[in-house]
Structures are given as structure tokens and as C-alpha cells.
Image (cartoon, rainbow, N blue to C red; front, side, top):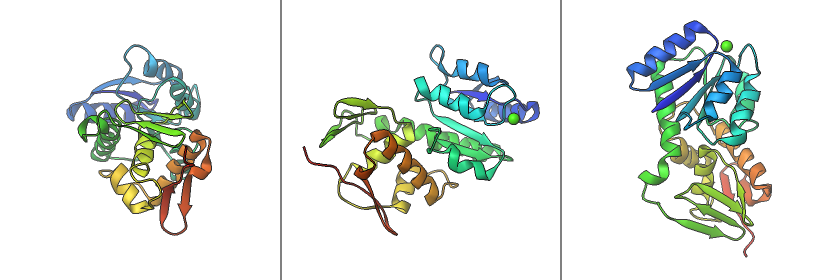
Length: 227
Ligand code: CA
């Protein structure tokens, strides 16, 4: 498993690199945003990107957007500030998760495993090959692709998993806590706001916000027009 670490702080970078290597990961470290954006998408690319938001040459947000423009690789953002989180996760950037400095290697490894488990969830959970069409929406769980009226919608691994769960029983209400457990099971640090942020991103990307209906005080359900 190859991790690309984009972090300019040498002390943080060496701690993370050593810790992840000890945990069995291969780590490629770069200290500039421009180099990171390039390494993230060239060749086979990494299996996961760890992206510090505070970089000297390029805004971390722009690095994230640049990667997302061409790649669905899981991205975990490293943030120095808690209040950046709402912007980071889902809403604007399409990052899959975040850690806030200071963080421990065990926490980081747990996040990495949770995010990569989500992105590889299809092969493991026996839904391989399942193609589901609900009205104008089609979900291919084997290929992790979503189409609306035949046009592909680019979702991150986490967004895909969230939509995929909601689509298991269209019309049924899923509680936030159920969605947290289903989509983020091994990550102890997410909150119901994380669900809301990712729901907002999925709605926006589908181009039909009304398809995912909020049920006040409970959660969400998928309501699609019938074909
Ligand atoms: Ca930094």
C-alpha cells in the first residue's frame, strides 16, 4: 500500500513517514504542493494521499482540487485547525477524511484503513457485479461508478459508499448514526456533521439535491422520480 505524503514540516513528515513505514506502508514524501499534485496522478499513482493544507508554494485546497480533477484516489487532509474541517471534508474539496494536528500514528493508521476499506469495499462485501438502476440514477457497485441520465458523476470513495447505502432501500429513512456506522465504521472521530457534509457533496454532484431528502431529526432517504 503506497501512501503519498504532502507535508512541508520536516519534523511532522519524518514522524509520519517512520510511523507509517513501521505499520507496513510504503511512503513517498514530498514537501511542495506542486510536486504532490503531480505525484498524486502520474503513473499508477499512490493508493492514498495524505495532504497537509498549509503548504509554502500552493494552497492545500488547490492541491486537493487539482488531484480531484483527474483522480478518485482517497485523500486524507491534515489540518492544523479544527474549524477548517467543514470546508475540508466533502463540502468543497472531496477529501475523504481528515486528521487535526497534533495526531498520533495509531489514529492516522485507523483513518487510512477506514478510508481504503471504503474504497475497496465492493470486492470484499459480496456486491460485486451488482448494477442498480433507480429511475434516472444508476449505480455500478463493481466499478464504483454512478450515472445520472447516462452521464457519469465523479464521486469520491466515501461519497459513493454513502449513496450506495441509501440506494439499498430507496424511500427508506437511514438514521445518521446508521450511516456513520455503515460508511465510517472503524473511524471513531467522525460526527453527524461529517454525514451532513458528505450528503451535501453528493447532492451537489448528482445535480438533483431533492433526490436525497433530509428527514428532520432523523436522517436521510433517497427519493427518486420513477422512470
Ligand atoms: Ca505545513
